[in-house]
Image (cartoon, rainbow over all chains, first blue to last red; front, top):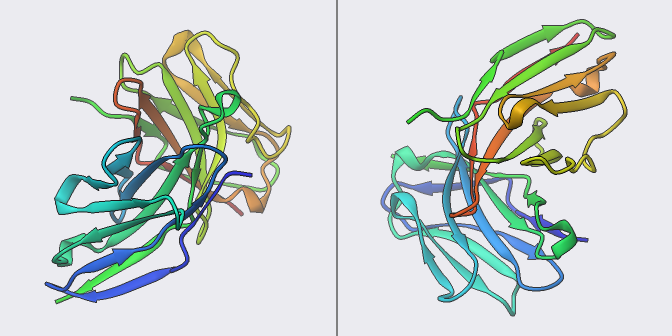
Amino acid sequence: AQSVAQPEDQVNVAEGNPLTVKCTYSVSGNPYLFWYVQYPNRGLQFLLKYITGDNLVKGSYGFEAEFNKSQTSFHLKKPSALVSDSALYFCAVRDPALYNFNKFYFGSGTKLNVKP
Amino acid sequence: GAGVSQSPSNKVTEKGKDVELRCDPISGHTALYWYRQSLGQGLEFLIYFQGNSAPDKSGLPSDRFSAERTGGSVSTLTIQRTQQEDSAVYLCANRDALTDTQYFGPGTRLTVL
């Protein structure tokens, strides 16, 4: 079965420090991977995606993610965290199987706390 | 431009009552999803609409849940005989077929007393 795991419920980081939010996936075939962010009292917003090509994907607000096929991971990173990055982050995978191609599977979310 | 809107933003109901949640999608985005976000949980896929094709209802948790999309635009999610475990935030999303990006509405927070 296709699935996504975000092993950390919460990540705490000091402003200015690098941050990493972890995501691992399990799919049969080549994955389509996504990161979304949910700010308090707001809907989810798209950050970035990996479909094919360069393993390092750059997205909105200075975020990037690295696709690692051998480790089945797609960790979200940012070189220097801002207090305004504090939010709930979701990793998602799209089922590559043609019969199920419209389904997206989301992780349980990781709350990022950036402290001044 | 206008994004995905949902109404109501909050709904409190009594156990056993029916509720109807509405989603107004982005014009031109034919793919529409409903998800459920429970406290501490990820997004749970409920149903998917694409144009005039039959919807993918495989994520609906029980026959108390149903959804329709009229004219390929507005969608309503109906929950009959609500139960306390139905309490959650219900999210609607449009997918842009060109970019494969989903645009989410702000959600409806449903509380079943």
